[in-house]
Amino acid sequence: MLVQEVVETERRSRPRRVWRRRLAVAMAVLFAAGTAVRLGGLESGIFLVPLVSFTPYFALAALVMLAIAALLRSRAATAIMLAVCVSLAWVVLPRALGGSADAPAPASGDASGTGTGTTSGADTGTSSDTASGIGTSSGTASGAGTASDAGTSSGTASDAGTSSGTGTASASSSAGGRTLRVLTANLNGGRGDATVIVDLVRRLNVDVLSIQELTYSARDRLSAAGLATLLPYHVGRADYRGPEGSGVYSRYPMTERTGLFQPVGHHMPVVEVALPGGSAVEVVVVHPVAPVPSTVPEWEAGIATLPPAPSSGPPRILAGDFNATLDHAVFRRLLDTGYTDAAASTGQGLTPTWPHGRSLPPLVAIDHVLTDGRGSAAATRVFDVPGSDHRALFADLRIQG
Image (cartoon, rainbow, N blue to C red):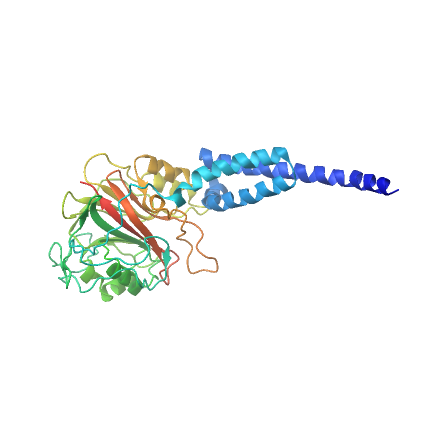
């Protein structure tokens, strides 16, 4: 009688096991289809373009699905999910592992070129909006300077400026090249805290600041907080409100350059920064439109028309809010021209920068600093900026030539 009951129970449970295994196979096929979209760069339209931004989370979900398939003893589902997980690991893990062991070491000196200061704190990871413990920068640069909206370099500071107690503020050199510290920040329609931005510039000894969504009021607040003293040279265009305005501030003299490319999206100034110790460095402030349903084609065109990495001329840096992640095909095609993503090369490619200050924590990395083959990153970090929906991204770069 007992044997009969066991046989009957087994007979009744068999259809349920078969149904579960079939469902596991169906889910595995869906994961495989999603992976094929990412690997093949097949995302398009208002649904897949935003969705592909979450590929790292998709990879975590794939690991969970692999475990479920194994528990259900579905050989087909397990085999499919193994292939999916290997493929996703191949595209996601490198941005967490960093570039290479031969990357230049982070600078230990400040912007004086004498190496007498310090840049304390971890080279990677996130930081609070007060940026405490991230380095020192005593004194102020000489020359008051002014922030011009006309797109011309202004200010009366000397080419290098001075920092009290640390000597002249010139680019330091190392075995990896000349140091250039870049900070990029989206001000969320001018609402970002100007005091925090200027504090970051001061503490991190920033040489070049790329600003997106720069309004007239934000420009005035930055100036009042002392930005013109730290970075006396300014090229850009502010706006009354919204995302149109952009600008670049520099410790060193700048020359605005036109005709490099035809921007599609918001204002994207291009400048040549007279970085000491070698040739000038070209900086492009990047800010295409966001890929919302009505602007996906314009978003794609905005990234596709960005200038490719040059093989000659000044070294080029692209810094800003790309509204794209490393998983978007159009962004990867830009990288394939010869650019390197600073965060990914330093093992911080999975550190999210948006959205910040909302009900959700930051989820995706859409703010980037790119260098051509003559530049590399020693360290990158992100910082919270109250009032902005983006985190600021700092890149400590080394420039050859």
